[in-house]
Image (cartoon, rainbow, N blue to C red):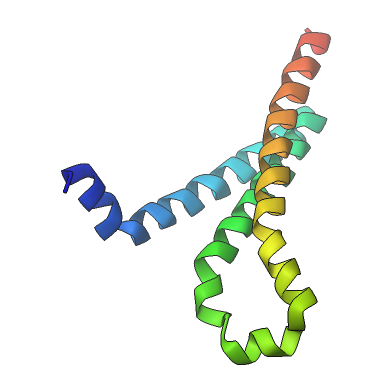
Length: 112
């Protein structure tokens, strides 16, 4: 097996923790942009980063609370909603970050 692939597979928790830390820092930096510069792009970036963070935490935690009893309790509609939640959060999160970067750049060009 490739050494890089072995490191990624064996150290998955470290990479997940770094990803969560990076998304948290992105959200905090975007909130600071919103507070200091009054940029709506910063707010959109923070909403997107928080949506990505929620999706990532859900993906990491779902194996721990998805038991057969829980799935039987929520029924087929709930299962469908739980299956749709991560792609929706990831899609809107990425769109929010990209739209926020575009909006902040546009705001900077108008300001100066």
